[in-house]
Image 1 (cartoon, rainbow, N blue to C red):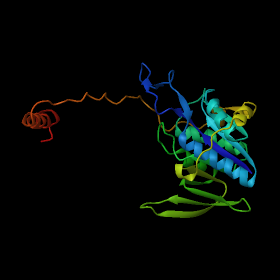
Image 2 (image 1 turned 45 degrees about the horizontal axis):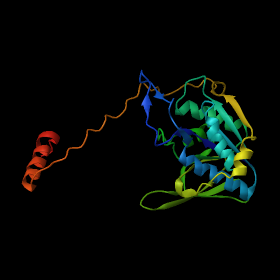
Image 3 (image 1 turned 180 degrees about the vertical axis):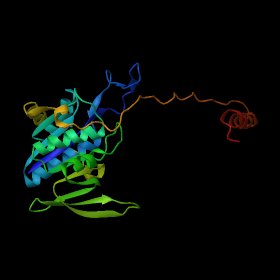
Image 4 (image 1 turned 135 degrees about the vertical axis):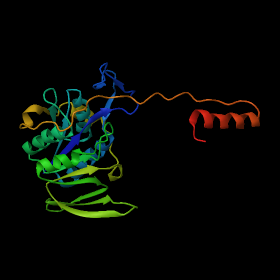
Length: 257
């Protein structure tokens, strides 16, 4: 069985985001990049399944050459090889990204795919469903448990519904699963794993060649940063002066009374 992982490299949450001068994109020159945290659970799910049932784990990611660093992390954790879909050519949104990834997955004959439930940079939560649709596969957006059948043709999963209720679903493969934090605890890459990852193959595919004429559905017109927070105000004086000052502030500045 070939098990696929969808991996995205995202900015570290501690990174201070800056925009380009024309405010049409994010300035990535000083960004520290990490593996999308939810994708770490997808990596772990794929590796655990391989350890139980056998098979081959293939990592798929879209982006420039720097994405290979994130892919090497997955390879060090135990994935077997990787496919990077290059984004140098073509226009990209969630739709065209899903088209290219789905074509790459189909070309490798992957029928079981794990992905993070969402990416922490844009929180779009679209990739699981879009990729599954393009593959003609089932999709389950958030799973908390996973069990593959003995014949490898279906899987049983649980996912949250609401109010603490859990839904148990049996799905026939092919399928794409979105992984949440509660699914597992991602392992750390061992030193031998890190060394072996350097020799594992990473194949590059041209993203534009996988689109088959498909075009973007959404065009981002620009970006804006949130306004800077105003400094706090400290009141001093007697208790009565503090009360009077607070009332004045709420009435004249904040205008809530």
